Image 1 (spheres, rainbow, N blue to C red):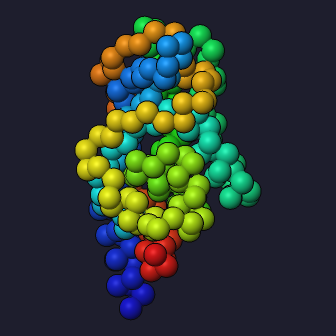
Image 2: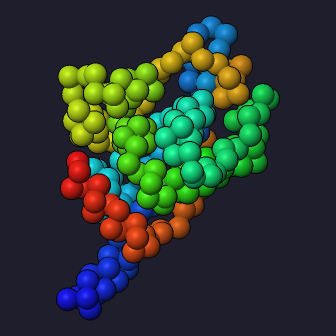
Length: 208
């Protein structure tokens, strides 16, 4: 039976994958004076850790900052990867600057989704696979909404979601003029899970 289990684990490690990309930066106008940049996050996976195998949402830099803070509080023993630094003169017109930020955001997410302990945080899943705002994510994760985490994920748009939210926040992801997306993307390799992560995902799927 031990050899059968080994074979199953080998099969999982060879076939299960997560591919995540950050692309298509876009400036959205908050009001007459303020705008912010958001990014498209696309996830493609066959992992049992995720409720949707393909998803696409849009998030802004300040929401990445919020996510990292949440994960840091929930997993004190893990050294989280850093986000790309704030740039107060960030501009979509600077292609190198845009690509550098997208690459940093993508590397952050890649590290997070391949860390088993972090996958137990429902806020991460809502961040990646729902169209909820960060305020709504907090409330949903606490179980104070009429819908569950799973329902919030399944009811989100199947395509790419475009939304304006949290307008009161204007930080380094702000710009002084509006613009359309540049259609830029950062290539991401497909990464297979190690065996330990397979077992952890199986455990999570049972709990959920």
